[in-house]
Length: 278
Ligand SMILES: *[C@@H]1O[C@H](CO)[C@@H](O)[C@H](O)[C@H]1NC(C)=O
Image (cartoon, rainbow, N blue to C red; front, top):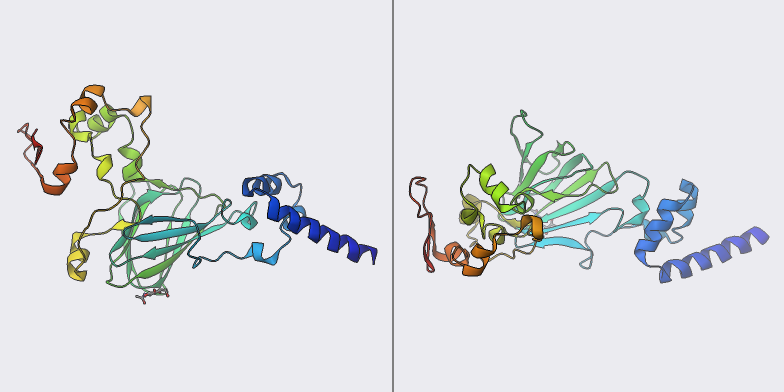
């Protein structure tokens, strides 16, 4: 009787506590708990062991090409100290999960439906690996590899990704690379000039983006304006030189809309847009 009362009391206190508690406090409590038993008992409700990927309110990375919903230490604290996380990719027709890496996890990806093309490079020296996954197909992306996924179909497609870390992390290659110091980016690209780098990051579509021209054409989808909010924040170390910023000479919005890019390296006129040639 005493133990029943204790359990009842503990669960009442537990649910009152978890209802009031700030999620980051719960995460801190779980991380501080001395044992796994303590962690389980810090989560008194069975519903705390359920994550609904189909819940429209679930936190997601969203772009024109779909969304990625991830159950990790932050969004699903039951994984804490268990070394596992999961994501579901909801790819719109021709949607592309743009090239990225997971700094702390290997990923295994299961294709639920549709045809999903994946590409990967594991490290310098490793060959490029491409797969076309059919429903039931699975592939692996080793920790740190650059990889991408594209829905090749004209219907939405779904994949499930499992990770061997509760905090796999994700690093989008284009957004992060173009967010480095502009002179370093320019020199890395064969010294194309800082002015040629300016504005490129503002053109990178948010993930999940629209994919290849071939797919869009086949499915009759236009590459409409995509949001570009995931670019790297500029601080002093990766700021553009102020003379470029203030003249706005190399601003590329109009180039994106109407411009052409010259492939002739010998000419100094690389971009032509409604703002002129430069
Ligand atoms: C895959 O499943 C999702 C969710 O049920 C559905 O919206 C989508 O149309 C399906 N796609 C294909 C190609 O069957």
